[in-house]
Length: 213
Image (cartoon, rainbow, N blue to C red; front, side, top):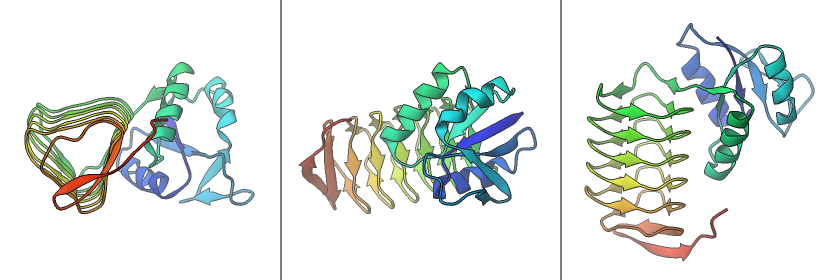
């Protein structure tokens, strides 16, 4: 299956590496609105142009893509535009990750090396579960969430859409983290977190509100 990657930064390189393990995918290149130099290549694959070329790629028979952008809001915007253009949003699952047979993942999901997604966990559309993260049993992760490297989310936790859980953070079991939340790096979350706030610390406390985009 021919596929292009949306984005040409660090996350795009990670996604390309993951897809390289799956011989059913043929990555034809990348698209990005910021072109660093003419004829730019990543791992030998061209940056095909800006995102405006998506319809042209579809007419040329490319039917699949994945969004490789760390920012949740931008990733969500791209996801819905591509879906409207009728592209198939595929998953990039690293072979050295562990996903329980009873766990469920949505579309356009990235699961990096060393990640564990345990029994009955649900991962929404367009999520990133980054290197070495643990999502324990019966967790429910909303759409467009980014779980950073080394995060540990204990069982039966719910995380609302477009939230970001910073690197190395720990989330206690049975909690609810709202939508559009930022959890600062290395935080220890021991209580529920409402929508549209940033929390940080050990234990984590609210630092400021966030205007939802």
